[in-house]
Length: 100
Image: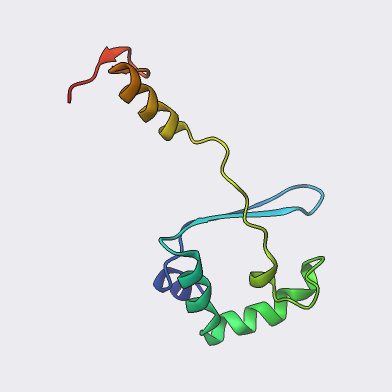
């Protein structure tokens, strides 16, 4: 599974589990569509989806990788810092002028 995820473009992949059972996954990929399509073509993923489906709620006939919700990013620290650097010419982290 690890090899399949890596080869299909998944990186920086983490899972977080809340005490109430809420599972949050985070990963980065150049293309979500390509990453999902690539994984769907692997035997290891098909076996994992079948084995894990009972642990997921509200799938409505979908496999777990078809039923996850993509969340909108509403804040990114690096983007905010870069924006301030561009607007002010000052690095907000160390309060020094940036060079261009």
